[in-house]
Length: 226
Image (cartoon, rainbow, N blue to C red; front, side, top):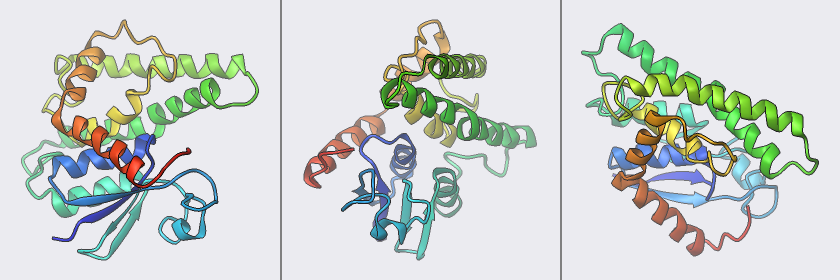
């Protein structure tokens, strides 16, 4: 099997989702790290726009099938459909309709609501050139509301996984975004089950492996900017 090619960013949460899926499925891959902007090695450069018309990471090239995918949910859906035949990360044929719906709705909650709220909070806290207290307050409130919603769901598994059935692609969607809570200056100390989940996922071997891999690739590829 030829290694798949993941196009990512050394700090971006969405490409990290794909790292987690690839590692959990034990698929061979290499990762090309891109930077922001339209300069050399930039996600807005002509070279990358040939791969992803949206100029955003992640993107995935599969030399085994000729498929090119971008947008994290589309990439994950592809990988699960083609390579997770045993349904280790997604509902199998024996799953109930409720279990399938739960898988879809919690994925959608992260992709359409929780992730974007975290992204906006990060922007206004860390990058916006003009201080905007109203925006900071709004996105702090929205993020903490999302943590509250997730806390109730995590309680069902005792903080082991988002879905009570066990670790799945849903956890892979959530982890890279929620690990940024400190960077976003969010106090999540009151969320007991989130804390258990966060520590548990952080101790998984594939998480440590990915962190080491990205750090080495950043140095090897000479990435010195965002």
